[in-house]
Length: 313
Image (cartoon, rainbow, N blue to C red; front, side, top):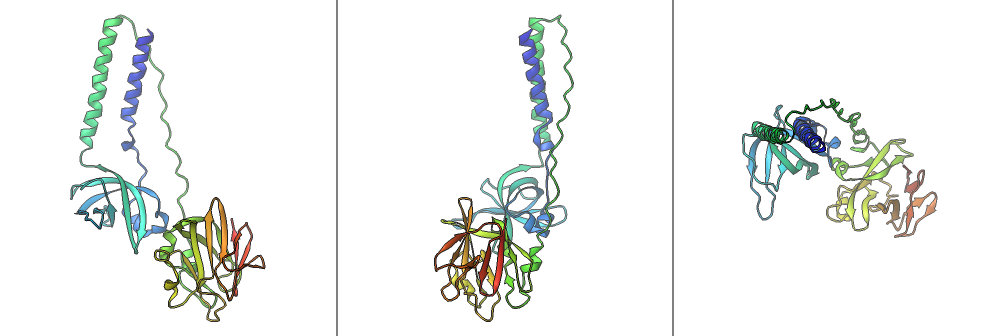
């Protein structure tokens, strides 16, 4: 009796697994949404569907990629190490969205052809039928006359609530272009760097009370972002690859140095380090020496020339 009940339980488990296969319920986005709202998807793992229109093999210097087009005609590049997909065939792709050199692309982690679901269903159905046959043979040999008690129905498990959609970040309009003296300038690519905890609140000038999210570049010391005066040669002051992890301040009076300070996040702490000699950075009114760093707490005020910023968690 115990053997029969155990085999029947195994049968129900396999049947439920077959008919609740994850391919039947996927939370997806699409290429059009990613292209229209890149800030909502960069560094996010997404699931999309589309038609492969072109495949470009990799070389010794480049990775292989293909172009995926959705039903609205929007296209995105998908970098792949899995192998070449079939052109003019639809796929479901899972991967992380990245932004580099003003171009969006997806780094593929898995891919599933949508042209052959029937084969998959056929294999699953065949496995279920084979298991039924095996169970029938076992039951017939052991206790052919015993009636099998009905099992209670199993309630379906509701899908998890994905929660509200993330709103678009309003700070692109607040900081993308300078509006006057002592205003902050950022590049749009800056929004795709690694997120740091907390925000900077502008305390004076035309952008007073505006809040700036912090996104930095990975370094051996931690995630880092620099701040300095906007000048024609500002990029020459930075290490290669750090151009988009930099906040610029419009300052014709030059009270802000071209490299004023750097924010560093490591070991769960946020610090600011002074880089300026002529106009040192102040933290809560205390002047920092060149190379000296101070830990930022919620409400700490940082002064760079005439610009005042408050760090908020």
